[in-house]
Amino acid sequence: MSGYVCLKLSPPPTCLSKHPRLPIPLVRNTLLGAALSFGLVFSFPSVSASQICRDVEPIQETLQTAPEVVTNEGLVEEAWQIVNDTFLDTGRHRWSQDTWQLKREAILSNSIQTRSKAHHIIKRMLSSLADPYTRFLSPDEFSKMARYDMTGVGINLKEVPDENGDLRLEVLGIILDGPAHSAGVRQGDEILAVNNMEVKGKSAFEVSSLLQGPNGTSVTIQVKHGNCGPVESIEVQRQLVARTPVFYRLEQLDNGVTSVGYIRLKEFNALARKDLVIAMKRLQDMGASYFILDLRDNLGGLVQAGIEIAKLFLNEGDTVIYTVGRDPQLQKAIVTDTSPLIQAPIVILVNDKTASASEIVASALHDNCRAVLVGKRTYGKGLIQSVFELDDGSGVVITVGKYVTPNHKDINGNGIEPDFQKLPAWDDISRHLKKCSMSQQG
Image 1: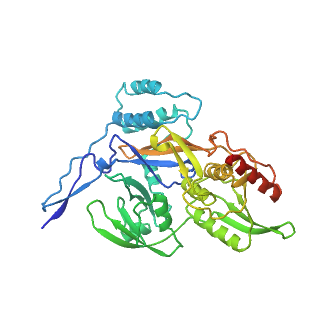
Image 2 (image 1 turned 180 degrees about the vertical axis):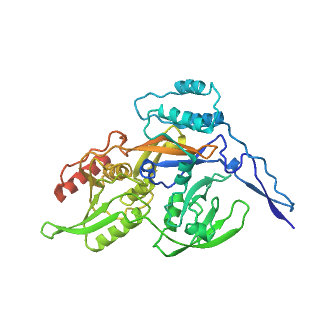
Image 3 (image 1 turned 120 degrees about the horizontal axis):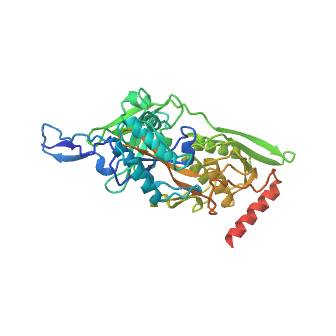
C-alpha cells in the first residue's frame, strides 16, 4: 500500500531562491492607492523552492532541511541584485550597471551590524536611483500589500509556473478571519475550480472576477491544500467591500433626435469591467446610438481592469498597449482577443488628472480609431513596477518597465493630447473617426 511523503527542499517555501526570479503577474490594486495604477508585478520563489510530493512507500517521518538565515549583508546584496537585473531608468539620470557595481562595492565594504541598519541602507540605495516609485517595503508593509483583497472573499491570488511552464493559481495572501479564511481556505492553497468551473489556464484576474458576486451570496471554491494535501470544495460567503465606480445615464440631444449614453468611470477597481458592461447594455437597450466615456479625474487603479475594459471596444487583433522593459517578459504587445461589445462612436472625456489605467484605455481607443478624445492633455503616468519579496519578509518595489501606446508613443511624462478641447458635433466626430480609419488602412 503506497502513501505520500513531502520532502521540503532548501530553500524553504517561505524564502526566495536567489535566481532565476520569475516576475508573476498579479491583478493589481493601487498603492494601495497609487502604485498598482502603474502595474505591479509580484516576484516570488521559483519552482525549485516549492514542496515536492512523491508517491512512495509510507514512512514515519518528514525530512526537512533547516531554514537558511539571511545575513544583513546578504539582504542588502539581494536588493542590489534585483535592481541590477531589472531596473529600467525612465528618467534622465543615465543609470548604468557600471556605476551600480561601484555602489555595491562601497556599500558592502563594511559589515552591517543590525537588520534595521540593513533596511536603512537599502532605502538609501533605492533613493539614489531618483525614481519616485522605486522604494523599500518593511515586512509589515509587504504583508499588507500581499493580503490586499480584490475578490470579495478575502484572498489575493498569484500565478505560479509549474514544471511544464503552465500556470497554476495559489492563494498569495489571506485576510485573517475573512470569509475564505473562516471557511477553511489557507495561504498557499491551489485554486482548482470556482463554482465547478475549472480555472486551469485562466489568469489571476479572470479567477478573481469569477469569485466576485453580490454581497451575501456564496461561491464554491475547490482547493488543494499545499502540494501534498487533500482536495476540498469550500463554500464561502462573499463580503465585497468594493463600491461600483460606474455612473451612467441616457442623454437626449438635438431636440431628442440623438440618444447618447453617458458613462462616468471614477476608478478601475475590481467591479469596473463588470459594471461597465451592465451600464453599456442597459444604455443600448434604452436606445443609445453614441457613447461618452468620462475619464476625467480618474487616476487609475487596477491596470488589468483598464486593459480588459479597453478590449470591450476594440476589434479582435487590435493592439491595446505595448509594454517595454529589460526583462524579455515585458517586451510584448497586449492584443484584443474578442469582438467589440459595441460599434457605436465613442467620445472619451479627459483632463490633467486622467492617469495610468485611464490613459491606457484612452490611447487604445484613440489609436485604433474607436474614439475621439475631448478635454485637456492627460497626466502622463505609464510605468510598471515589480514587487520583490526579500529573504526576511521585507520587499522592494522597482520600476521595471513602461507602457507605450499602439501608435508607439511613450505615455510617461508626456500624457496624451486630445483631439478637441470642447465637445464637437457628432457629425464631426464620425468624420474624424472615418478619416482616422482610412489613414490607417492606407
